[in-house]
Length: 356
Ligand code: TTP
Ligand code: MG
Image 1: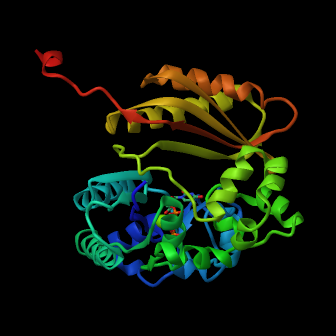
Image 2 (image 1 turned 120 degrees about the vertical axis):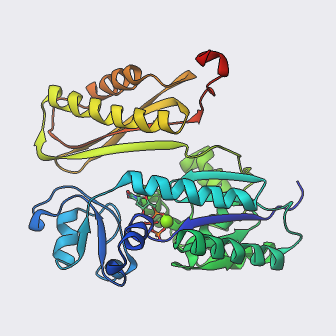
């Protein structure tokens, strides 16, 4: 495979930054986006927060009540998804101007394969600066960019210096760059795998890279080999041109834990309708429906079902999420319920004949 140059772009404190842009009075203040804190009695979670709020220890997915305790004087704002979605569409359109191959991976991040656009890393750096300038001048937002020989390196690099960072990792620097980073920085390694690796005496990516692959295979199976390759900076996955986000989700934390299946189904129905509206507005179809269930003790489970063909039927989203929920009912009450649609594909374009 010829040498590639891949860029990963991730907006800084995205939801919070858009809110600050819309209301400059918030600039420099700790801003927390998420559920209503209700003077510390709120039960939802933090979606994200400004870097000023992060200094207090607040972060994404933290209970909003804890965020309130850490900084009661922060500005707490509800999630205004439409606003962020619009900003996201405009940002992705800017990025499309700079690459012939772009893969959007979430509302605020994308990979660009710039191998055909630049001849070397210094040129890639110039391109990254141009992109940052365009996003800042056209959207008044900052982003962090990572550049490397593959997607994994680019992604870790974009996270390396945030906010407003630009980190370039050339092929001969990959090993050194990864060596002292904690294993958690590798995409796909969550708290569980991290704990298991720790038991083996593996804390850094460098330690993982030099650990015998056979032993990792014995413990983790194929996933062990895959992770070992990533730790060695090997990732041949392509930047897959797509037309927007691959998944969407909506969730709700109940004011009181519940075991009421009718209520749960009703809420999931609303979430499904919201997702469906977003799906249709984006002219997309889905292949996978998933749910997330968090019990009163915070134990969290997910389940999903995939279809052979892409669909955009709201009744099917509702029916599937209800079916998926059944297995989680019974022994404990539920605190949070979420619905997710994934494997999104471009929907059928409307044709003139439909209107004639
Ligand atoms: P991230 O890019 O993970 O976070 P961020 O942009 O807020 O901050 P960073 O500077 O570290 O990149 O996620 C993008 C948006 O997705 C984020 O602004 C809000 C939303 N989000 C949630 O709603 N819940 C979550 O748990 C996470 C991680 C993100
Ligand atoms: Mg971000």
